[in-house]
Length: 306
Image 1: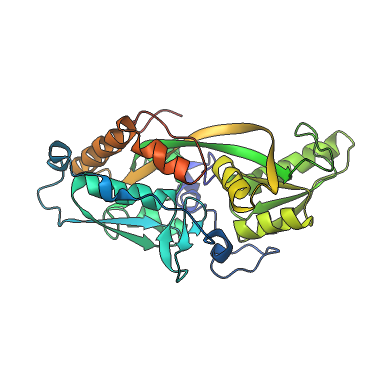
Image 2 (image 1 turned 120 degrees about the horizontal axis):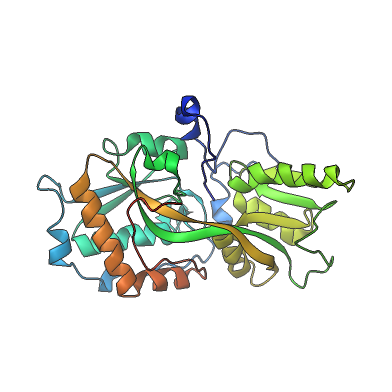
């Protein structure tokens, strides 16, 4: 989950740059975020059957040029990553969502890859919107408008059948893999410190730049536990053909949102109405089902309180 922690106002600029992709030293070295694994036989939702809704399209700004440019960090399967036969095609449920929104609005959609930290600063200039697993929080809402569309949490995953008999309530002494820059990357050190505080063995943390590498090392047995977003864990079950499974319940759920500039209320209204339409018609739920994940919200709220 790409979540921003609560920070002092003076640190806001730095806070907005927290991302699921960092320059931290890690075990993994995949230059493209390991997306070659993630894109193997990746599904895709056919948006061609979605028609333009004139009443919603009419909400677009008068000067809208017909192309919706969406900023996304394409290194975060299954939400957004490079896929396709060439390994360079924007792919994922967020990409399918962007294309579905474009169909409702009668707009062409261009998904532009960007460093996660650069997307919010580029909203309104480089990008019309950002759809890239942005967790909604007060710090971001102070800078941009956010339209809720999915709920994500954190999950532990283990090898299928839980051969080591692990308990989600006590993972002290295990080897845990996380992707650098995620909220799980931040939390895992606190979990390990809690273990030591009660006299138990600490958690050995292995960090990877690529989520695909975390999953691969779980299947291979190098790590005991994978700690990731709930949708990432669900997708790992699909991609590994059931070689991993969820351990325990989803925790720390929070909504994610489509990002739009605060000085672009007409575009915000159009995207919010289009998102609500996709929810009401069941399209958004079907997109997620295509990817084998859940978490669809049924109300596209603007800047919800979290």
